[in-house]
Image (cartoon, rainbow, N blue to C red; front, side, top):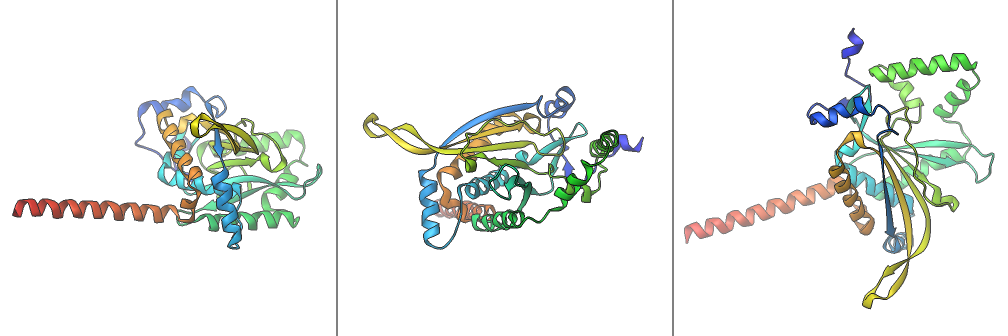
Length: 308
């Protein structure tokens, strides 16, 4: 009976103060793909491209992928409900912020494809993120197998019936929140979100399914950069560099109003990439400093009016 009431997990803390509709939703829609909603966004990336070129001229190498990941960190910090997941019909919030992405060792059909995981921190700037992502990619391209690659190669060699039974046990442990952290770390499906940069191989961005295993509630695909028409000055058509992003999101983690407002926050950082040179914590401190200055000016003005 103890398992029925076990709420603790190694990778998240249970959300207790959400409204009843959100809490009942996992019992109505039991799978992520059943509960998935989809958003398509297109971004004029000329400001991002100029930002990247300017930084590279300074000897700082960043990419469009780095910009998108950094913009997501800023968004999740401000909109923490995005960092949630459903497990065992319960709503949890991740202990940290992490992103998964696939890396090909070489651009050939038979080359190893591995899943990299980057852990993010509120003190990270885009440069911290770029360095961490590059280190992950370099390790995979060196051809060294990671723990998850070794685990997958081992389990696929097991007899089919045994493999099916083993995965049933793992799913059961995950449902009740008793899976060992070491096993979670070895399975590349436990993260805040998964991002697939299909534009790096010249592909458009499709809507991707969500994995029913693990804790990833958001999947983003990035397409190739292409020219698209925009309304310019005097209603003239202007052709600008554009990228499409497709979002697949488990709507059980929060309501639609919250999701839409969160995407608008993400839009803001995509339109102003220079803001990514500062961490979410820096922006918060600056905002709090501004509020303090406004409050102090108001108090000074009110004191002057009273004395007068």
